[in-house]
Length: 86
Image (cartoon, rainbow, N blue to C red; front, side):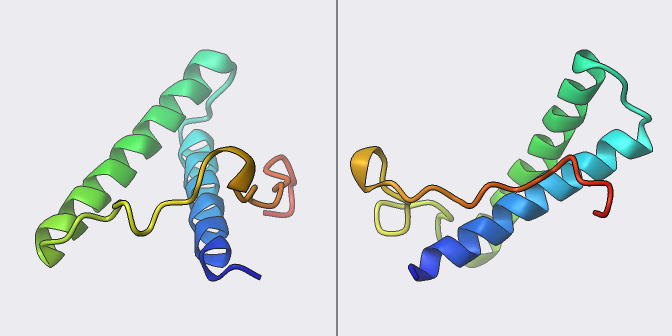
């Protein structure tokens, strides 16, 4: 198993989960309202990244810690975000 895959998968699931919670809190119905929930979650993630970079003095994303694109890319496991058990 690739070490970065676990961390990336966890981050993806947290992002999905927070988007779902925002959509539920807003009683989002339909494409436009769910898109707004996704955008709100993206704003939260951006703020968190910028704060972390400011506190550490280091970029979160760099040439040394990104996941490759193309044939070398590692696909995160599919998550069932529509599951009612979440």
